[in-house]
Length: 227
Ligand code: ADP
Ligand code: MG
Image 1: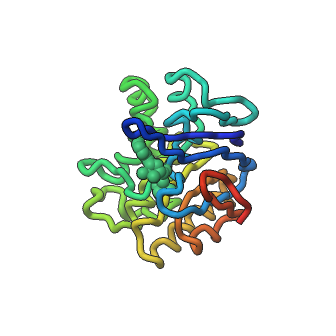
Image 2 (image 1 turned 180 degrees about the vertical axis):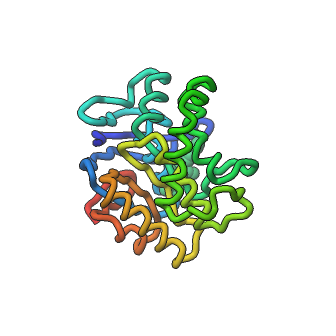
Image 3 (image 1 turned 90 degrees about the vertical axis):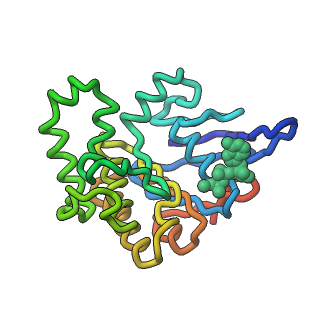
């Protein structure tokens, strides 16, 4: 996917806060790209635009050769559910659900209750396979409060993969974890990239974490520079 001349500013009263000021970059199919930038540099803003959670003031986001930022909201929702997986710093797991149930939530959202019920066996099998893949075979019945930070992030990664996305967008996925646990999460991501050919765009403020990717670019003053 690619961006072309992305601009985004936020408005606080009469004051415009420019955040992204002409973002141009591409991520190639199967690539693991990281974008490093200081806190407040616009990393989350950029990731939201890539995932069509928000729209740019100017410029374009393209996916598989088609412009996606200007699609109607309902089409963007479909596109996002189908092609993009998202992982965040604070996991956003539902506290009352087990790891397995959390991984299944995208299926409930994407399908009607009836559709989900009809396909529940396949979904459940896929969710179990994903939890195994991220190393949580023995934690499927655990609720988030019974999991460590690293385990919660593994569950969140499995959830992001349920719909078999083409691109994983990760916003500071190790930001709340100690170095050793962060390293394990990076190994999980690198393995998914290598073995499942998953395209990954990760943003982080941590240089060491960024360097685990194939390619690193830098977000400085609203623009992308080669790192
Ligand atoms: P990062 O993820 O790199 O820390 P963000 O993209 O979250 O940066 O934020 C970039 C800048 O935009 C910051 O100065 C932040 O305060 C501002 N900002 C982010 N979201 C909003 C918003 N919804 N309204 C106003 N300002 C915002
Ligand atoms: Mg952020």
